[in-house]
Image 1: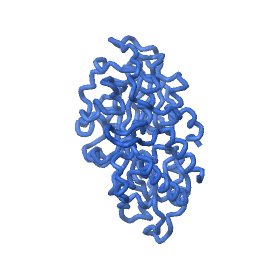
Image 2: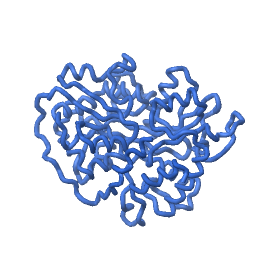
Image 3: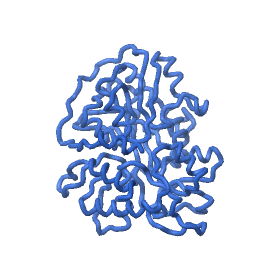
Image 4: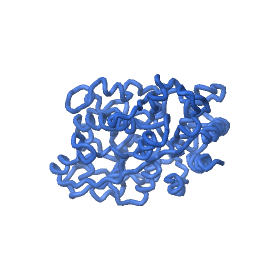
Length: 386
């Protein structure tokens, strides 16, 4: 499985206390180099091949001469591995990858003065801690959203109120057990989902940040995940495989992305999504420029292009995410509407605990917390039944 392939590259304990080395940022954008290589989440960069209505690549290529090539990655860990290998200009990194890329000097600072549409960004994202480090911008926000609980409406006449349906053994509304009928995410960052659940159900643990756990809190999260292992039919990281599991393998509930749920519903499958009462983890993704990018001019042109209201609007509909340009929800430039943005979680920003890489130290004044390399090795153990 992917997590085991990349674990070696992740054993870099992300010590962000040091100041990243800054590459010289450009002062102007020149002619495009004719090509652009991007690492992206599935469904993030569409050229009309999946659905002709969704295409934000073809016109960009015609306007700039920059031929876009995309390598999809199923997990943040895979993204970090690919960027470490080199050969890519940009990556759409979530917060559990972005800080590792900054600390590992795999991405460079950007000049936001060369991105005219920066002014249209959601103010809450302009200096978000997963890409704004040491007073320096390391990328352009792309989209954000929650990790939702996807569920079968045939099994659940009403949306599940709690994540307990995937964490605790129980009889579901159809009278059958949840054993073997639920899934969990195949990535060490999922430990934060367990911690978030414990925040609500075991307040005596004192968890305040699911990404910064003391040894006691961390041990409790692992215990919960080891118990969940008996329920999980498959750990998912490939969106297409999870969709097939929902349709054909009897999976009725799982952490997921709105992308999978939207595709299931478009195919007539009886599935929906919810954010349970405990809240949710989530992702706020950033387009980041590789330190050794071979096509920086095309990259800057693309970063500006991604902030167009039309692209943000259509991508939000396609992926089930929330635009980083708020006007894209209401200005009619694309397919999205205010109601659609609300359905994708636009009003839940303060309820989402956005992915970020656990660091070697907790916030100032807190006890030591568990570094990310331990999350990697321990979650492999959980999946392996240890």
